[in-house]
Amino acid sequence: MKKNYKKKGGKHQHAAAHAPQEGDVRAKKHLGQHFLTDESVAERIADTLTYKGYPHVLEIGPGMGVLTKYLLRKDADIHVIEIDTESVAYLHEHYPALEGKIHEKDFLKYDISEVFKQDQLAIIGNFPYNISSQIVFKMLELREYIPEFSGMFQKEVAQRICEKEGSKTYGILSVLVQAFYEAEYLFTVPPSVFNPPPKVDSGVLRLTRKEVLSLPCDEKLFFRVVKTAFQQRRKTLRNSLKIFDLPENIKEDSIFGLRPEQLSTARFIELTQKIQPYAV
Image (cartoon, rainbow, N blue to C red; front, side):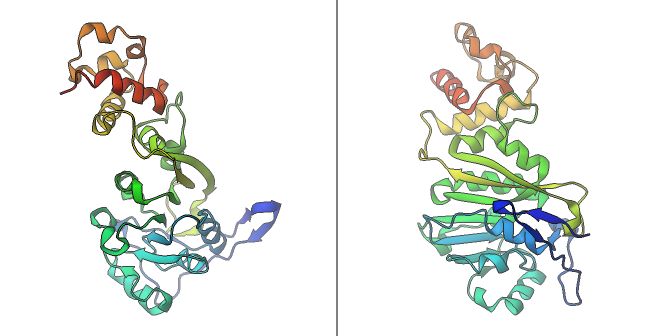
């Protein structure tokens, strides 16, 4: 199925869908692989990064390189990380420009300083649905090195990351990501442009790191407060945060009468500051 996609400046580009060929990599269910086959979508994703303020770009899970091809046209040092040995062999054969830059590793266990030392780098990818949230948590741990992050998620996850307080889909990922990054939902991608097609729409987002790399509160406690609050999201904070064993007079503060989805990232920081003197 071919789709038209609206481009910047109001122009349209006809999408070239790639039919599976002999010698292509077989998508593996246990790796959550859905290979993007639409060239125009790949080009749009490559265009989501600014390529400014960092020398390197790391693509996670390139598969057969449909996005990689467009990244290699950019003025940046492109690296890819891929756990699937069949994909790695395919990339070596079809993308000689990646010589020495294909890392056959699991991103979730990867020490980026092995290759990139203390350099800044952007992360991009068509992320496997089954580990996409874990990729975001790992990116947050590495935030001092990652000024930009963009890519494709299950639509619902991409929307959740970019959602603001007051919404039912606003949650742990929304608060933790937005504490450190500006989050923008960019566009939706239909299942028809993948092989095999997933059962749901996908969404592309961009995260741009904020100036402030650290929070004005204990960050481990902040993460714990946010996660604990949303684990019982229907309860008020007075009830969901009982695990912290706070003195009764503190819990009289009006903030404890709210539910977690009513708090912006800034108010979660304020809440953490209130809890901090009593937290063990």
